[in-house]
Image (cartoon, rainbow, N blue to C red; front, side, top):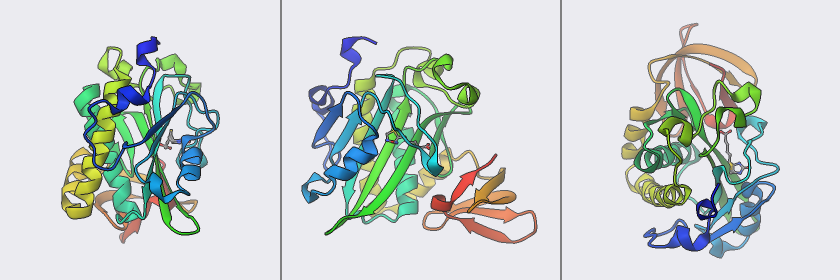
Length: 262
Ligand code: BTN
């Protein structure tokens, strides 16, 4: 990794034309989890839109209690603070996925798909993940959007059990990606799509459906620890994944309590 590739607040903010996201940016060399740091900063109401980056996390976490692995300066690891977010959590989850996929397509030159609710998939493998956490502080509700994008990893960088399912932009793009450009595009994309979600929910869900890997496919999932199998017949932006179960009934599964088994 060259020094030029290290994340730098001035480089990230140069010519950044966002309205809300990334007006303030902090870059940590190393931290526990950017979501934890963001949660601390979120206690101050003035930190809406603040983005915390880290080159390394020693306690990075993913959805459903998993660990999020990364090595120094090989990823984009960040958390964004949204105060009193007016977008419901299911739609927010889809919106962030669309924003990340869009940014990867524009700068990472990858055709990014979305595996519900918000895994970002390139050529069938996971390249990025999103962890949304909502907290009530003493005087406002805060949503922290955690995003991890694999950039410079080689296959051997991933733990053995992830090597067949995880990938990076460099692997898929066949070249070393520019993390600063990708970071700038990510912040702009989030800024744009979060605004769209407030005014035109359908535009987000249309875009999400276009990129979805599950629609029309057989899905097995775990909901509150119980297994369900059926055909994915759609997504409801407020309620979650819609499955036509093998037993015959149609049922919805919200993202907070569901993990896709296959
Ligand atoms: C997942 O797919 O399971 C979600 C992964 C989210 C990882 C990011 S990295 C930055 C932020 N800090 C964390 O501890 N997790 C998120």
